[in-house]
Image 1 (cartoon, rainbow, N blue to C red):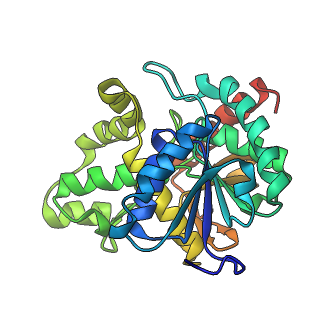
Image 2 (tube, rainbow, N blue to C red):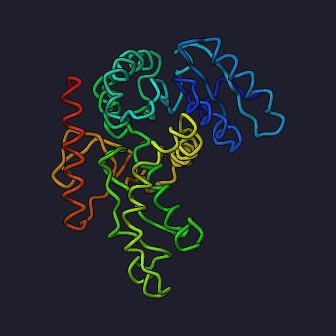
Length: 317
């Protein structure tokens, strides 16, 4: 066992549902951290999950998996909030807001009681609304309160482009920005494949994507609804997205990821949390990119911010 007197890489997860545990499972396999703490409103559920994960440790890198109360947030560099009601079939992320805001208002002070300076990562939906609430309730600096944002949406965008062109998705670069939800914006003007602009790529391979663009937009924007209709919930891909965020933080990679963060005038947007490409490392978000967009994309991003501001107004923020 490791020396418990020394600070080590530790993540605390609040909420041991499908998303929280898929994240913990993927993190265990990848060996990203030295300690994973599981907290749930039903302690027995967290205890059972910790036992189940721990029994597989002979096949993974060493990690301590514990369950208990909010005292387990102490010394965690990152606290992930995955607690909240699930999105139901036919329900938008904004429909979830009133139910889940109350949960965040209850959970965040308990975290802060035991850990005054974590990087707080929101994954529960509607993630942009709840990130803003967590920021206000915690009193933490904005760079230390982030969300999974549109990291998953960006993954979906890149995957669908890679399928269309039959190319490794790791060579496809493009971003989804704005709300993680119905008003999100696919930034077509910035897509490149191996450094080649999308339009040049289309010309080089003699395959235009124009007619396919509306279908890809629909598939990215409505992916969660389709998955929920077919299997009840989404959790595998978001768990991998969260692992990517975790890796960037603990390894101080200064990676560019579309996590959600507070806007401070980017594209004329203020006082909402939404997603733009951000530099992410051990201290949280160090830089937010706001390079010029196509006119229609910038207008759509501003509209997305208005949707989120209206949502915040509706829940008293």
